[in-house]
Structures are given as structure tokens and as C-alpha cells.
Image (cartoon, rainbow, N blue to C red; front, side, top):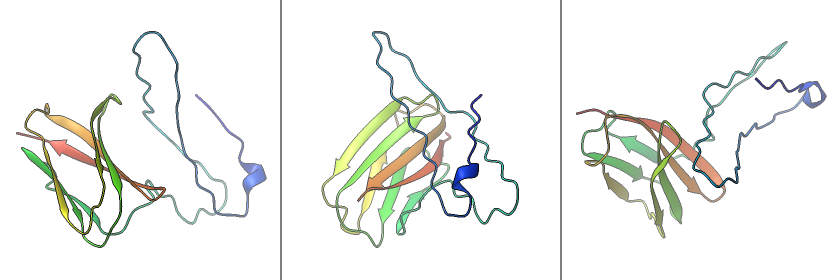
Length: 133
């Protein structure tokens, strides 16, 4: 359990990011399971993602294909699929999304929950997708 006193940051808008780095000779996963933010006073908003407008992940739940629609976006994107243990299942760099649909073949994935993460121009969008057959 980690408690951080944020009183010195009162009176503004702030982004909290949790990152991890580990150097080891054996394989080990780090998983952030629960995050709770408690505020005394008024809290205006709490956002899970800094959303990139124009990205849609469907269908959800998915069966054999996961589609990502880049309706209003152009530029390079890095798409990462992560299982719930934190293991990166797939990473794809797309040089130009150019308002197109990217499809990922999910037939080899086990049933369960995954995170689809898209990073574009220093912004990141993440959505949970369920594989159910």
C-alpha cells in the first residue's frame, strides 16, 4: 500500500500516471490491481484515460477479430494488446492510420479480458476488450 500526500498540489488540475520499471535476471510481472484516489473537498473529475477522439474499439466482446477504427485521425500509432497479467500479447506500429480501420486477428487469444492501448502523438488511449467464444 502506498499513500502519497497531495496537499501541496491543491488548487489545480493534475495528471497522475503510474509507470513501472524493473531490471531482473528472471521473468517477473508487475501488476497494478487497484487504484483509489480519495479527495477531501470537491473533486471536479476523475478520468481513466486521456481519450483520443476518433478511436473506436469493436466488437466488445470480440470473438475472432478486434477492430480499431481511426475515424478522424492521421499519423503514426503504436497499438499494443496486453493481457490482464500485464504480458504484452502483441505490438503493432502503424506508420499512417489515415482514417482507416485496423483489424487484429484474435483467434489465437484465450478467452478473457485484454487491454488495447493506442499511443499517438504523446497521447494514449486504452480500452478493455473481452474475448468470448
